[in-house]
Structure formats: C-alpha cells, structure tokens
Image 1 (cartoon, rainbow, N blue to C red):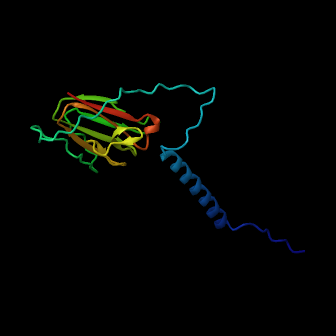
Image 2 (tube, rainbow, N blue to C red):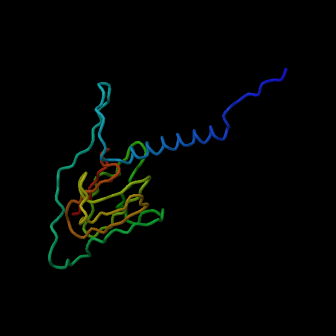
Image 3 (cartoon, rainbow, N blue to C red):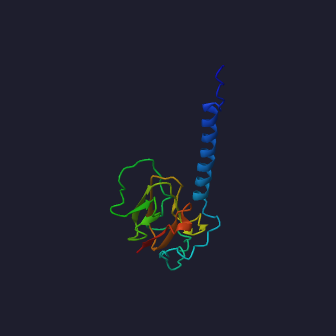
Length: 177
C-alpha cells in the first residue's frame, strides 16, 4: 500500500503572505505615529495625567522697514554634519524616543547670538505655535534635519515646535534679550 503524499502550502508562498501582512501593519503604525492631526483617543479612568509645559502667548517682533544695524536673522542652515553645535553654548537638542521634547524648552540668549539645534530622531523645528507654522519666522528647520542654526539679531520671543510631534507637546521658545 503506497504512503499518501502530504499536501502543504509552498513555504515561499507562506513567507510572502506573512511578509506582506507585516509590511502593511508596519506602514499603518508609521502613518498613525507620524500623523499629528489625527483624532485623539479619550483616556481611560486608569490613565495617568502628564503635566505638559505651557508658554504664555507671544508675538514675534514686527518687521522693520529700515535695514537693521545688527546682522539680521539668517535663514537657518541645515546640515548633514553630526559635529557638535558651534553656538557657544547656545544649543538645543531635539530628543526623540518616548520623550519627544526640546532640551532646553526655553533658551535665553543675547541679540546677535547663534543658536544651533541638533536632532536625535526625526524632528523639525518651525516658527509658530501648534498647529500653525509661521512661514515668515526665522526658525525653519526641515523635517529630518541633523543640525540647524539661526542667528537672532532682534530681541523678542521666538516660539517654535516640531510639526510631527506637536500633539505630544514638543514645543520650545528662544528669548532674545
């Protein structure tokens, strides 16, 4: 009596099906994580409240019609370099992972100072307050930057935030005296 052959799915077909399902799930997770405009879930009764820092609203200084005597805000310079910031201690780090914050959240510098941002993860730094980006503001670091610098000539408070992580409270300000 002959032994019946065992029928089974081809191993490569099963692996391909699993790979496609895993890729679709991973893509969905990335899309939901990156979307800062999505619907927020209502916390359960067991949720632990987290204090999120708030800043008093401030308006960027009004533009002047005459040329400034001091150097004006440079349109920042993004760089692929991972060298240490050259801001003379005026450095901000965009921290990723579970925290997603700017360190320090508020930095005070003198007029004419250069501030350098260094990103740890996929972040941006844009002038304005969430969710509105101020395209005329001096801080315009593109998403995914490594280092970015701006020289602030005029006194004032310059608010900025990370577009992908604004809903997580990733905001900061530069106070120029």
